[in-house]
Image (tube, rainbow, N blue to C red; front, side):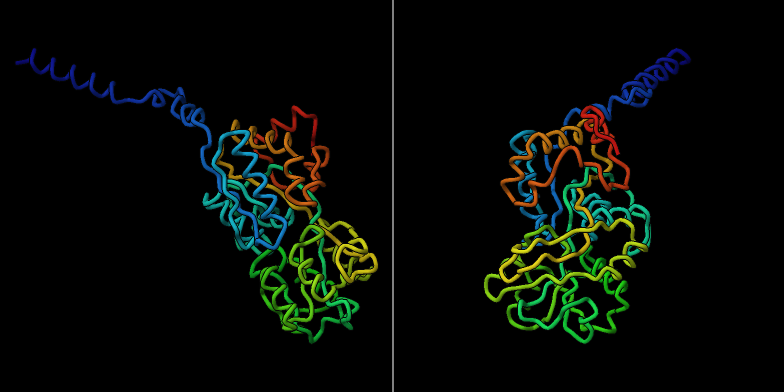
Length: 329
């Protein structure tokens, strides 16, 4: 009887041992197997079809498919703020955003009530220029002249809206002083052409497709922001940089417009492996010519400036790539 009991106990121990995975012993081979499998699918959160993120996102999707065999899709979204939420939830793997919005997200300030986890940086890309657009024959000459006007401030909760509020604030205005419209670029353009709004804020590369569309039909002007307003803005929000929208950027714009800009940034879900993000970063920067063919603004992306203005933590995979290239923050 005792012999039989010992035999049964021995078999039980063997079965338990056989069910144990190698990772239970601390080898970590389970996670290594997952990493070796690599990233097969990637959704890239961009913005509206009338902006710059979407065509460049399509270019990145093409690069990832051709260079890495990843089935990638550029997804239309509400842009920066929504993209940070999607990335944090793991609903997308890569996301475009403004550098200021990324900073707000990871620190849980401004438009975010709490810190968003799971967000890492790949790089900054190009200046996102704040453009206050009016009709070429409009009597609006300054931010202060928006008082009492119908103004599109961007999609609800977008980086565009956040920048609109900041500039209005610097000029001593709030939503109480204007008739705000919360619209995407494309919807703003339609309303503009129909005479339903007097002005629109656009945080985008130049030229912006929606603004160009308006300009062809009725001509537009980009308003210069006064020095006093810029000074007040930069004192509170030091991530803004000085910029100019050159004359001739749009039909009807005959003079340079002095303004400010933030920087577009590319971010990634922190859970992606170091190898995957290294490969993604390298593929993008090895194929900047492809991106440049997708939109004029993408021609401004350079390896040398890839980490300028990026205040959130770099993903280890991106860090490894830029270390190899001798690029530091």
